[in-house]
Image (cartoon, rainbow, N blue to C red; front, side):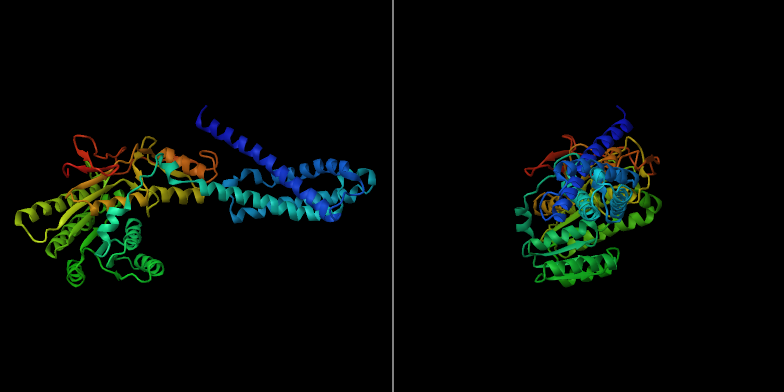
Length: 464
């Protein structure tokens, strides 16, 4: 069975189940209307006639729902703006039943002509039942939907105790604090009760948003919102001199492959030179631990972005050697952490797909064979904080399981939204963009990395 046939089979099965559920909802509404109209007693024409009339009531409601297009809507995707369609359907059913009562006034037609009052009460109850039924199902489905299902593996759970013990009572500096990873780092670091947290971010709105959030969640914490650019070496020096951070987590970087490919000089300046300068300041001011956020695209890179991050890793690792050679006291310990794609981060393919699905636009996939490694924000931050607490002066990476085919991810997200791939939402292939690989590499083979005593965390043998 091909993909379209499977989609249509699933569509038909779900609509049959939906139809049965709607008949039950209308039945409950109709019998509720009878009981309310006759003070919880049987009507004078008897329950047999009521049962006979229900077949007509149910048929009229189902036809109204079909003609109103309600069965083209997936319950999982029910939104507030869709509810008017169900109200139109029940109102149409009410009008038809009222018309039957008017054109068939003879008592012998009681089985097809419920009283006006019963029809009106049934309209109210059926409208409420049909809407609540769908909203409840939509809520249940969304609550069950998880990143784990889409990335096709279980999320790694990190032991927070070592990282918490390392961060607690120390001054921590996070660059790129307004980004997806940076803002989660801010939350996790504050939960570990640092002495002070320095949030460095050049984007005004991003910094405002994360500061407002943490002021609410951690009102007693010593938090400094510093609107500075990591490329401004003089400004960074002032921060180090005034606040003397003990731990620096450098998350500020350009990460979009096509954008950096089109602007290589800026990518090199921001990703490599800024990292080199910041790490140099960390060594100069005696920072205890410097953690560079890197990427799996730094493994055998073909893109400008990957090459800038690899160069940043090499610059940081060289400082470890320089510190040892010069016997600086105290020595700064440098490390880097390589990520795969962070699920749902700002500007990610997941965010793009969600926007396209929400607007019922074609979902754009570069190539049917394109694969990527994914991790959740909680995994990414857990790995960073684990790395900060470990003794190695090394490059860390996470065993992220099997890569996810981007086409499978797109189809899964469309289904998660209650829609049908290729039927409700088309998928189009746009071609591989400059600097992209079909498949990224983790670099965790026995030849290139060794496993640590922490689950799924590896240490690269060299930055190359």
